[in-house]
Image (cartoon, rainbow, N blue to C red):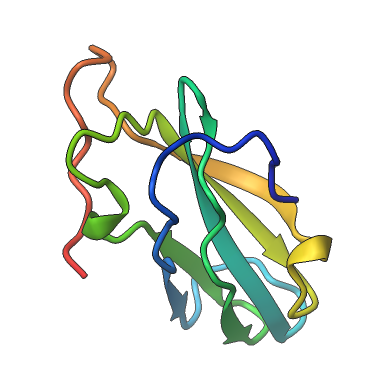
Length: 114
């Protein structure tokens, strides 16, 4: 479920979704659609586009925030990860978050290059 209190931060790029064969605990296969939203002290960014991932029983899924999700001067404290069974942003449900800063609250975490 995307949030509606929007901060003045640029829209988020789509996350990188990796389906890892085996090692997971999905009991059946299917397709999920993922989106991320950055959250600063002022509110949330515009959600990213949906990215689909097709998985099988026993797989796991890794969601990666691309490096360009943090624009120069942006104070994103975390990225909220949402998923849906349908290719429809209205049906997104929050499933977790990725922190934007180390425990010292001053050092941004490293993001992957995209």
